[in-house]
Image (cartoon, rainbow, N blue to C red; front, side, top):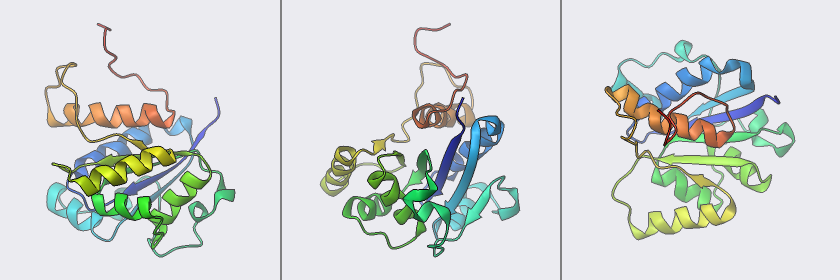
Length: 188
């Protein structure tokens, strides 16, 4: 199995638990990872603090890149990353990516993924959507991105918030190419 080279973007949208559990699951899947780089938006750490308690950069098991680091490997297509997941993803980030505005490392990396025809998976955590949101998501879908809204499923009968969040995290990781043991409809 070829190892996945992945970029994880975390924005300041509410839903830091999605990012926390995504990183935890990726740590469990490290045998499938060739490289993992993490980018936090300016507000992501503040939202993490507010929703989950004190953000500790040392608790992140992968290399963190600064938003203004345009010399980071993911700023170039030659780095050959396999996939990028932005989770949770603000509508502002979606709008900047859809418009081709690469003003920081996260939006530049997303732009690179689109131009290189690699997997860009965006996990919006917003509701309701307005027409601008929908138009940006349509544009990104047409450009090759995958929109995987943070809309958890209930058919596996989750008993905790973490179980519920993991329905989105697992689905996102499968979309990125990971082999994981998760609930599949029709299985017992």
